[in-house]
Image: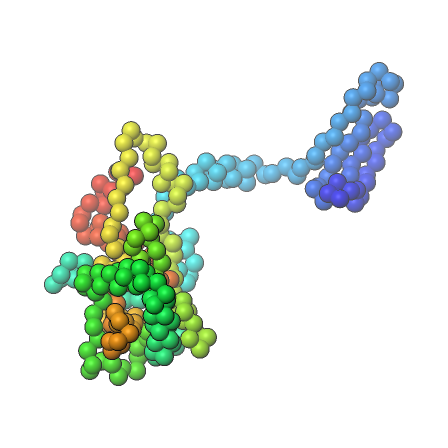
Length: 302
């Protein structure tokens, strides 16, 4: 079907003819006058291609040669207008904390978009479902309680005082757990994509541009020197504080046992489930490098 003739252009009896197919134009037939005389038996089939302009060919060549190695700017014209605006909000809302180590950020809310309303009832149902799973799997419950306790102990969540419980502008994040690769620890996942009356928290946030290095670029760096070093920032997102008014939309319900009273907690740091979190984290990392005055050294190492 792909080479079925759609159109035929014939030449002289001793010349090849052209066929238009789904794959383009194909030229086939006799290629030497001697074939007509029976002196040669050769026959060829050639695929005709449109000649690419020289300037376009050169442009394609350099684009291919530089793939993944051209680097990525923190901001620039390659970003969409929406991404540029989101990054502008993130950068303007990022400030270094004077009283403690770290940074505080404001979330890039979509202008004019109504923020999610109080969905405590949804969060309570999800908690009750989680507790039913605890009854079926005590090992999972033990690991979950341990993981949640670590989150609270590290200061990544705070107990909301009773004076703030009646706030109208607040939102609750349902949460669940997934086993880590070691099979003995659980990661608590806060669900920013959970819909309530057709809307979730991520529907109200700008995602921002992808500021992460391309994987190809990272792999190429391993060929530059004999020894390669990697590092990991523990709890990278959670260490970045969010403003109090934004934290109010990251509340959650929790109790270690169904016999206890349900308490309202609030995440104080950037939540992994937020769509804008990767952009915020990378931007803060860039800001940290600039504030430390080692930007030139980082560029040289690249």
